[in-house]
Length: 490
Ligand SMILES: [Mn+2]
Image (cartoon, rainbow, N blue to C red; front, top):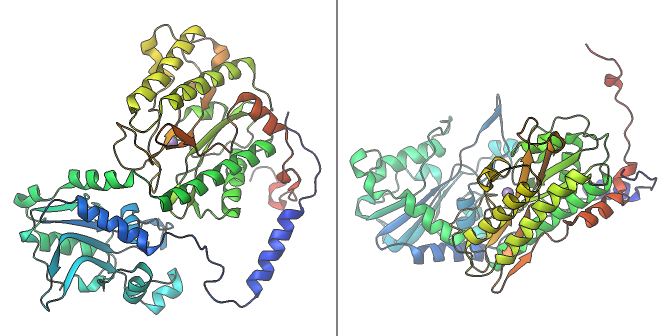
């Protein structure tokens, strides 16, 4: 059983009190903003690296992601296209970045080798949806010399016919066409007209494969600036796991567990989660991307928690599976240990130059042999029934970050996430039914091995049981019963 003991939670109240006081003080606008955003020099360096890797006579074209309707006139919180952010630092929608291999000259004799088209400043719009950088802001803050309003793209004279390669992502096919005449829809349409993309016969020059290859080669190797943000995102996610392990109780709901993780993330400054939080109690853990999190009482089975804090755009991806009642049962322990051993075996293969297939084969071999020994499968080839996904992936600006991982290289950051999922009615002894375990860690590949970035959250059985037995500041966070919840039914 997890321990519920009284302990005053002074911290939370002090924190709330201080934030009230801070909010009441007039202050310079930037004083309380985070100080560790990626600097303009990082983005400029990435554009230079991209330019160096491009073939002669080429241009890379990157559009912002479209905005999306959440409800009626309300949009989903905007998430920038990671490529746009990586190569420019610009986080607003309705924008276009072009990086040219060679220096270009415009009709006035002005030279440029990159162009950024941004949202125009608009006081009325900004009162509703927040400040825009605009042309001057983008020049100053992002350090990009050639910035224009989106509306100027139409008359901007670029002769795309001279380029041997136009390297671009496949444009979204469902971009909403708003009332603005320079929104993303217009930028894409104008680009198609100017570049000849609209004419089918020209499509050989448009290279989507090369786009993925060039951007993937850069993005899979993390710079020191990126590593610093990733380390923070991963540590924050681990502290979320730890607090939940301390606080977890059979009467909690999946939503409540999700809220606790995300509260810790936000308290520590992570703006978002890098993907929908997966909180699966018992058999819900068998659904690999279960995000409904709607079970009202998690009970005494295990809970699988796959949650990643996103810090300044960089996301962690950490999974822990723990027994809610504080002790692994014999069956839970057997399955958990198998997943743990598979993970350790994969870890031991990792270093600069190692093959991803080695890590993957080793982990799969251990799980296959273990499941055979436990009598859950009869032949090794059945392993995919209970371990149906890959062993891991890159993380970064995308939770499934771009780039080949055939051969691992120094400064790649990857996940190792073996799992075993035994649904009810599976073809094995009933005692295994409903057990789902995934352990997922984030690792930095080094010259001679790896650094376990997610070392802050326990993985070993004994260490998890110890963590669950600890008190949590959240144990005493009690709310009055809901007035509207007293009446049963409608
Ligand atoms: Mn993952």
